[in-house]
Length: 213
Image 1: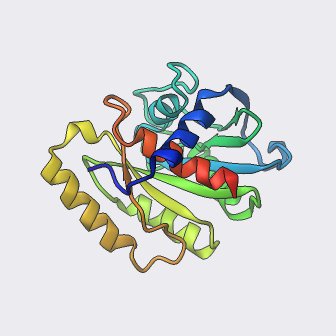
Image 2: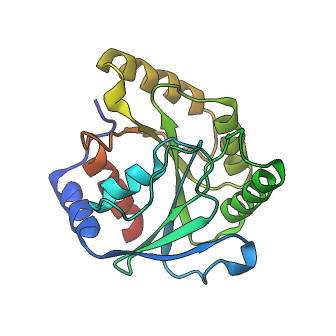
């Protein structure tokens, strides 16, 4: 079980979109360095080491588009990737790490929150949740920020190859209940694995549909 079902046509649109060129644009560490808005943007947020870089690489079908690290807090910038001039993918700094300097963590958090609140081109934030751990207080804080900003977000479960199918089904049910009354939460949860490619085609289809709106 990887989440909602998509038609063959929708899956093919997603495949075509992500089979095109995807290139790194820039990384920014301050709001005044953000690129001018042009077209739709999809952001990827999550706790440190949740698997954002691995998921982005899997979506784009590339090994080193985004750099993955086992060191929490390594991604300190907002990184922009251009997907064929149709869609921008935005890799946000991880949150919830304890080893980063407090002043740096505060700066990254402030930049990220300002981006999620005030970016008109941001169509949706994919909020990545490690399927082994489920929702944590830091995730709930980010969800509240997005709710208050009326910024659409969708839960994407990661690393589902590391848990059993029954546990995954229970987690999807539990997470669905947790977001049911949140005003900015998209109801569909997509369960993914960058290792087995589970849910990757479905997430591509979802993002392609957003890009076409």
